[in-house]
Length: 245
Image (tube, rainbow, N blue to C red; front, side):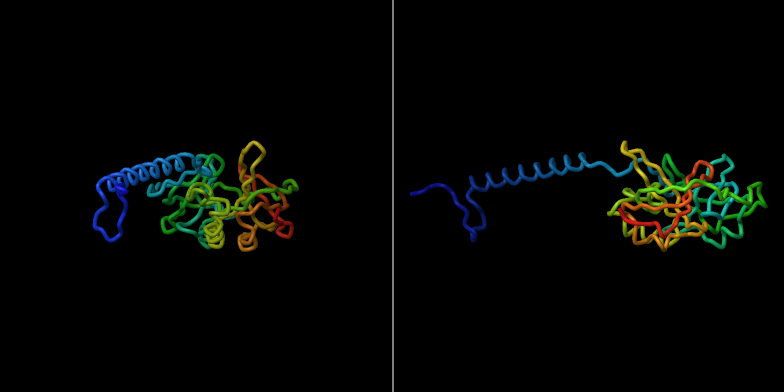
């Protein structure tokens, strides 16, 4: 007779030798699964690790508030910061207009990477200290004709609030942020992987967020007038030139 143990479904226990074998096999399988999961996790690379969002760290900021081409703070230290509101909203337009070129102070949270910086402002804390020393014309109205290629993203998430803050996985979130008024930027990358950011506004300097929603997170090309605001590049884009690559 065959004396090898075998499994009987209606028995409450397997044969001792078979039960011990199954326990060893299950334990080894679980260990292998944990090791494999760890190796896979370790092999993954984040899309960007340079972004920073000081979540929960509310600070006081001050400088000249400028409303065009997007709400910005010309900081007392000379730095330029884009301004947004909490969650998926841009800085309130009426508040920006009423405080244009005022010396202001407010509470907010820093967002930024090595290329751009931004402040998530608590709008109710914005306080005018009087008209500042800013100039009425922030942009020169001059520039160079340019045709650029890259990916349209919402600046808030890309600069540090989300990771990844670009590409297809972030498309739905980016569309909501841009629809809420977050300034769009074009992320360009050269052959060596070096990134550049270009702020996007319409040719007349107004917001073009609604016109670009269908093109978010895709390789695109668009043309316009390229200007500098401090160390920031701004493309006053001809929306008719926008096309997928």
